[in-house]
Image (cartoon, rainbow, N blue to C red; front, side):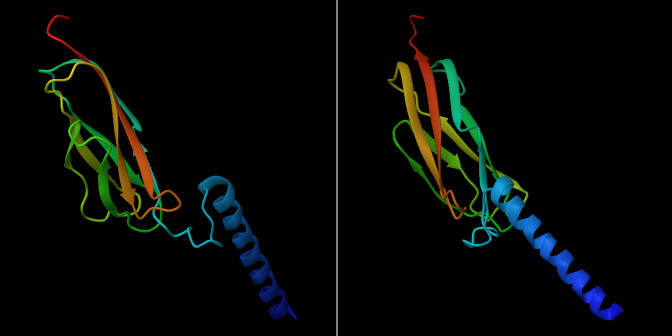
Length: 148
């Protein structure tokens, strides 16, 4: 009798743990065991908006964004796509998988020759993350002319 009671108690505890996991998954992690995304990598990119502010053509225009993997499996950045190839240069991005809990960085620079005034461009990070495979990073600047 006690053996059956212990087995029943174990199943009840396991059932409660599974319910807690599903609850946390749905309401806090925004992923689902049921749709197969629970064990997938999840991308957090900081910042999503890179604002250079007022800059001159001679200023250092190299910046970086941090890509964090908050999921359970390795994050693979498949490619970085530019909205304007003559506006941004991608210097480096992680080519090796980013392990769970780790981060990588994407280094880029704004191309300034023969530009002035407000510039708004972007690039897209494509990865194996779920549910968001594509992350848009916007880049803005106000390029001052020599007269300012």
